[in-house]
Image (cartoon, rainbow, N blue to C red; front, side, top):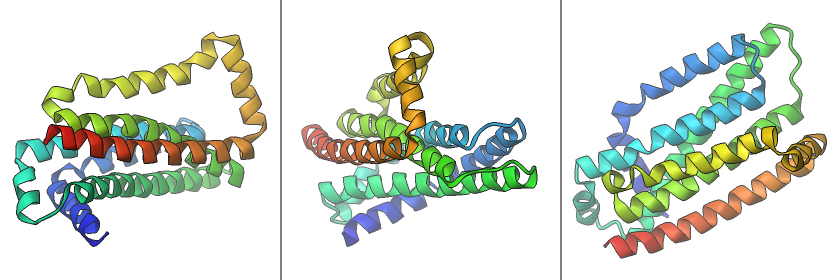
Length: 214
């Protein structure tokens, strides 16, 4: 575990140049807030934006040939992968917490009520979307490297986009979506369970993929 934390810290230091992206995210969230977007919309925005930004850690790794550094520090394969997951999801959690806080703050300032259930739904839906995107992307990038996997890396975005727009075109999915929104607590539990399963399977798959690449 300690080596995984060291790996996450190493990712943090090598990723410092990318943190200006979070300023862009903050401005985007503020703009959406003043446009009247819901807290759930803010959560979804965070999920795809951070997923997009986090792919850059693989660019940095490949560009600077960091795998030699990992080897010199005696960080084994599983700690490299676990540390990468820690780094990626720590960034996501911080970004989501700050963005939701901004959204709630602006809503209260404008006298717009925000319920705890709405915040919980925003977090659980956002986590599920982020888990689906990164859960597919991370094993792909560990298997092929960023350069070879750029096209494959778009697959999860298209997959998630398809899930999001299906309710608009298919009556069955539209009815299912309406049912879920009427039973938000159950939906939140399902989202959290699905996120946990996706991340577990993704982590195990990433280990297998990285071993094949080695």
